Image 1: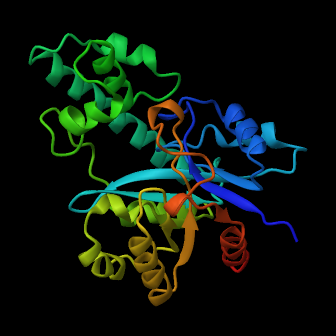
Image 2 (image 1 turned 120 degrees about the vertical axis):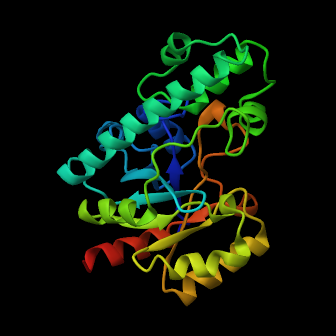
Length: 279
């Protein structure tokens, strides 16, 4: 039987990716993927567009979202099999969009007030839908303040950097509840970014509502992947995986590729479907 592969973590121009939902579908077909999930930051607006683009192609498009939360540090929660039109979820996402807008505006003010030739108008023009920090980074690169988007984050606007502004502090439990109310599964995204592998077990113990953990991720080492799999077994969590593809905004991420350059088997999606069907 032919092996089937998936990518359950990617972003479009609806948030901070450089490809439209339709373009992501075509790219996934070109890579012979069997299923993808569109997981834009704090927005599900591109989901139905991607599903329509995939209609009749055989490619499954799992409705998804990535929600930003704060629990001592920024923590992202992925939602899968959500109902994008769910009223409670839409209200939650509208609140998040407003918070994101205020945060980006505050960061632009902070930068411009400290000698950076950057304006809100130019940052806003870069966004096709939702304005985000990546659009600030692009302006900083264009003006010569950073050599790349990654450098702009690492030196200027990333968490803990001089021009970082924290957004509305939503607890992970609130995001998980919003995902569940929309009929979805809630998954801890890229635990690598928490930089707390030693304390991750305790964090998972404090989030009994979680359904899964993103074990298979490009920046995870083999040792980290195995540790996250161990924790998934211990806490009876689903294993998921994705590339976190952003197009040119994160060029090191390759669609369809997870940990250690490996493709992500379809079997993980099958197990997610089984759990969803039991609800």
